[in-house]
Image 1: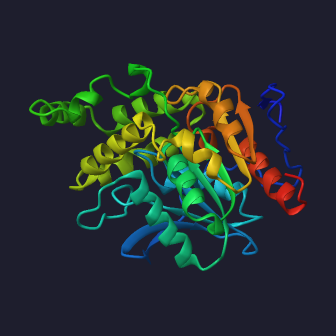
Image 2: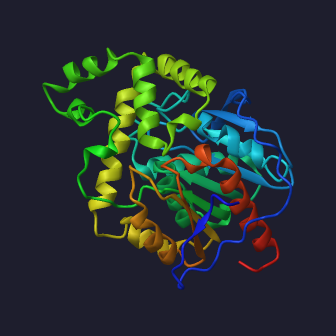
Image 3: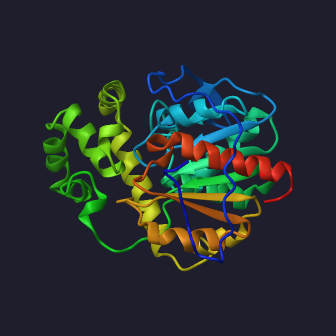
Amino acid sequence: MTDMLETARPALTRVPLSASPLPPLDTSVRPYVGERVVAGKHRLFVRHTPGNAAATAVYVHGLGGSSTNWTDLSTQLAGYADGYSPDLPGFGRSEPEAGYDYSMVAHARTMIDYVESLDRGAVHLAGNSMGGTVALIVAVLRPDLVRTLTLVSPAMPDLRPSLRRVSDPRLPLTMLPFIGPSMQRRLDALGPRARTEQVMRLCFADPGVVPEHRIVESMEEAAEMGGLPWVNAALNGSTLSLFRMWVTSGQRSMWRLAPRVKAPSLVVWGAEDRLISVRRAPRTARLLPRGRLLVLPRTGHVAQMERPISVARAMLGMWESVEEQTW
């Protein structure tokens, strides 16, 4: 627990860290075998981490991510909850339905369909980055389906332009007319290893903590997804939807949605997050009516991958506090 740094701001209540036993971290665990399931009109690819069926946890990945982003955390929490990690439409192995628009609301409604299909009642819902945005919208639209909400570096509005937020400074150019396709071909020519290492340097405070086999897994997944015709549409459409939510001042503004969340909420942020500044963390936690904040030092944008034990202890601490009615 020495790698944890609580926010010192008095308006935010301390996050209780569970002392319950967790398994030793085994980073050699392969991503769990998944299957395609029907959720509403969608067929989603979902990885299931078998666990304690008394509770259910659903994990939502971020932009450009997939269900494999939750392997270590879901394993840590398996003794306390059955874990389900779906690939959103257009990401991982989930083929989108024709006409799917990749908006944050569309992703949220897809997740609502999925949670309903589980028929488990309210679940512990967790999301990272864009997945945090999706999870927050789910909690607003269907509070009856969310027992607790965990947001790991959620994609809250952060409009300061910076090329530090992209894995390659040429990446934004791929969305432009005329030059976009040629720029995409140049990036593709880098090869899966170079592209994977670029993403890890962006998302991790210390890419050296990533074991070699995890790098290989990411390369294999990138190679598998690279030839699919909907990949770029999913990335571009989801990115544009996020930007629209960042600039709107109406009821769909993330800052307007957060106060409408009823569920007990945990916000986890890496102090060295290059994608979404940790300066957004206190405001996010304060706007959530039952929100608390944990900031992790020496941690980047994917705390559930970089510090799975720390995130697991915080999430489990929330779950236990909710059961004890002390959250």
